[in-house]
Image 1: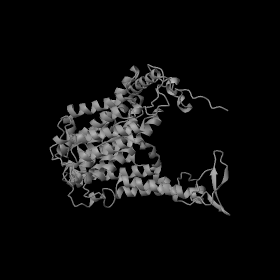
Image 2: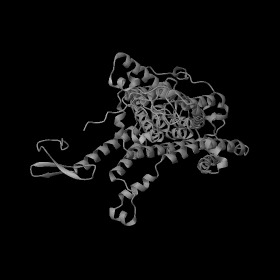
Image 3: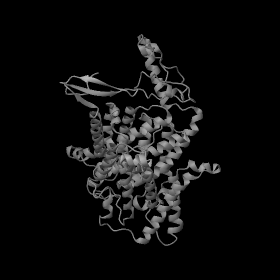
Image 4: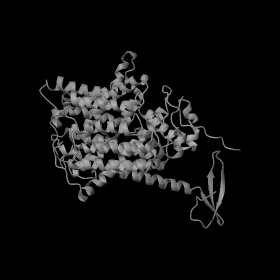
Length: 560
């Protein structure tokens, strides 16, 4: 029976449930491939069949023009009734990313202004050139725990070069279309990844309770206090034994009060369900928590005769626009083989971590919007964004899962929301910097601890516990939430290696363990009988059959 002729412009069944119109040709995967939602209409028809099958030169030329029109329409057109949602999402996310950018800059040990500049640059550049509209980009925790190594070991003057080299790696990743290999990173690897990331960032905040904090970015001067790439005693635990003096007990008490004020606010505010107060959910809980901590500092702590450190005390924001790397006030090292040797390991790790976060966020947003982003183009956009961030002396960035989810739920899944986020960050940087200087550093500690709490996969403890129990005991006690013990080993190994080494090595170890587990599991289906090798193959119906192989062959997984 002849196969039916494919019809250009028809989407798969699972997508057609929520999509009424399509404005791209499925035969052209190099485009953004984003389907139009039900409230959008394409100004032009899809590419016709003759063009897609190969017609005359005029048809081909018209097809190219049509594809260009479709490309820009899908990426940059915003229906009139969707503009308000896009602007609202950009404002909400813009308010949320500024405190996080400042907090991650403190983790690295650089001035808060540089973290905000990084978010500003990556938001605009990746938002325009990336392959997934709606993704929120900026300074992130995954990047912070990597880039701090080069700042501590070599100095901030090497940070810009490192970020730019990482950007080049991301561009190469996208141009070579290596995103297909991201399937090797399993869910168990990602669980170990995020768990270790939460531990590292959480421990890093303890440094805020030290008496002396250096944010100049000079060699071995940082908020975390690690003096080598290898983390001692697990993650940043060495902050407890580095010998640096702590703040006075009364100051520590006031700081803990501000930390508690921020954390309690971020915990309780999302629980408000009163319809009359639904406007509260339009304001990020982190922003409300930071403002409440600021109120505690200036209405309670200082009138009582005490004061804690504020952002203005650590690294005053000046309201200036981002400047070039060569005008940051420190001497830039020559770009030679010695410099490349110093920055190459950190740049490779930074690119790997940023790409993992970017692809993971892209996949999540694809699922939420029932659309398809271009992974290779997104990697290229990420690389361009990091190159731009490096040129202004920024710390590098990638997509932020939490803020991207907020943007989608608020109605921002087009590029207008990304641009609006950048505009909001710019306005805060230029017009509200005096208010930012008044925020106590303890407020950011509370915010980061809450982010760590939400980042950590607490359910992994239950899965690990159930996996190590004997099968008979699990069945008798009704404990059915179990994952394979190989996956448990991957989670533990990735977490531990991340704490003592770095994220890229940990992910590589997790992938190797997964491949080894797969090889062992596959070999269990092979049996010997006489002079023949049999491989049991499972089919969709659940039945199996034995397929004879050539006994002289070294590969058991041959034809059949």
